[in-house]
Length: 123
Image 1 (cartoon, one colour):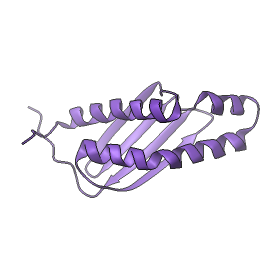
Image 2 (cartoon, one colour):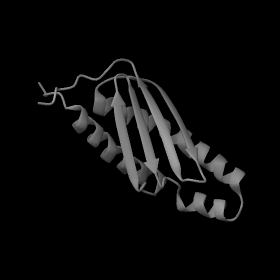
Image 3 (spheres, helix red, strand yellow):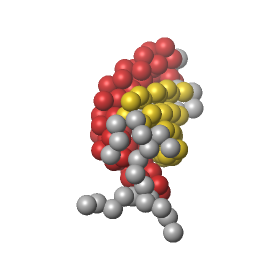
Image 4 (cartoon, helix red, strand yellow):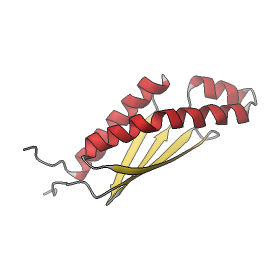
């Protein structure tokens, strides 16, 4: 039987694996990924999350097209992100809510879990 992770270990594992998923799926690695677990919710903030193509669209004033590209990328990534979170936490994800602010390059995701993950207490 596997020993449960601490909250910090679980958050670090999510940080690393989500960054790797974005690098693989988007072809761009966010500068920083920050995951925080609070009971049945995980908040995820990705810094510098825009792909080079989205950045070029923004620079050329094609904000609406950049927004559509981001929305489509986020929707395409959701099933893989949901699977990753379920694998790491051992708990079902009942909803993923996400959004990006193209002007700042920040992306936020809230994962709502069916129950709180089993965690080992820190000493």
